Length: 257
Ligand SMILES: [Fe+2]
Ligand SMILES: [Fe+2]
Image 1 (cartoon, rainbow, N blue to C red):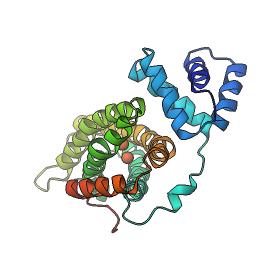
Image 2 (cartoon, rainbow, N blue to C red):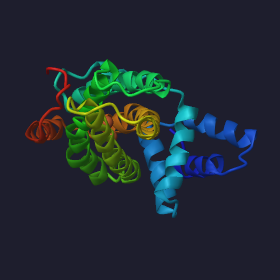
Image 3 (spheres, helix red, strand yellow):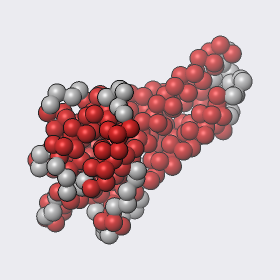
Image 4 (tube, rainbow, N blue to C red):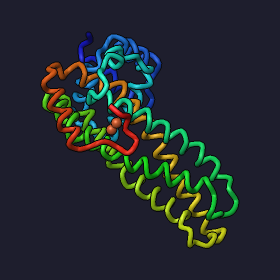
């Protein structure tokens, strides 16, 4: 347990350019004692105090660096098919796609000429389709999980997560469009300059998605979901949330419940 006002102040200080080691140590000491709910509350205080979402996102990254991935015991005890169990397991799948996309982008970066039959292009299309297919995962978060947190006064972190979903969406669709361009069987090989421009756009999109979506998942796994587990105590609420999640449906890669 910590004083959340003190924690918010410490997080604001380490988020500012030129933060010194003593401030970082103070924030680390507070974070070590804080519960996930207290972290959320402190973040929300920063938003209420006028911090822009973009600034809070930078702060959030620092919080996580300070947090240094803590284990959440409750996660292992979730029954299969629980709203959060499904979301956690979908994250594992999405992280697998991101690993493949990361390696693929590195290979494409050194590919000299366009080969319409390249297996890497087929793989890119497959990965982009699955990332676009994660939309139902985001929709369950936005329409079911986040509102329950907001009802309990946790507004800041869901706001950042929604903002980030909105930033991923057009990039994932554009990546799929680019993948479709090079895998059309009727297409003749691209001219070298055209392929170089295609490769650059793919590299930029893949770089953004891999880095920021990994970071997004890290924040949800380590702060947002544990906060939800702690704050939503009534099993009946979780059952109703499950019913609404089932109404939205699963992703093409969701684990069987
Ligand atoms: Fe999310
Ligand atoms: Fe998620």
